Length: 168
Ligand SMILES: [Cu+2]
Image (cartoon, rainbow, N blue to C red; front, side, top):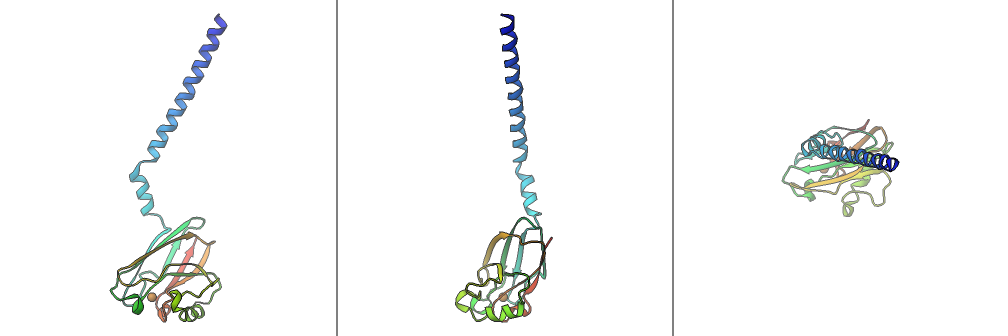
């Protein structure tokens, strides 16, 4: 009888210990879900990029820096008022080694495809073409570390609307 009691006691205490363990994990889970902390992290995420464009054919950024190995979110806003047929903007990220001027000149001939050459292999990611007051959002995996060119491929815009996209 004594032995049985000891075994029972042992089983009971193991159950207690494992139960306690579970509770601790639950508590950890709770503190992780604290919403203020998470939202602060999102705001300071360097891969969450907001870039604006305007009626004066300009982006507000000439350089964008993101971290490698993570998703990148680009939010392009057109803060002007002009129609996309007149002052349309997009954000096009080129692969390394692609000539920006050459690409821009080719893209200008693809009006029916929002100025993206059909079936192109020169592009990592691009947004749709937007007009005044509109916003476009894209998400993609950051390419490997290095420096890339970005531009707006609306005809003639790349002269002013271009910059460096740096992955670190
Ligand atoms: Cu543009």
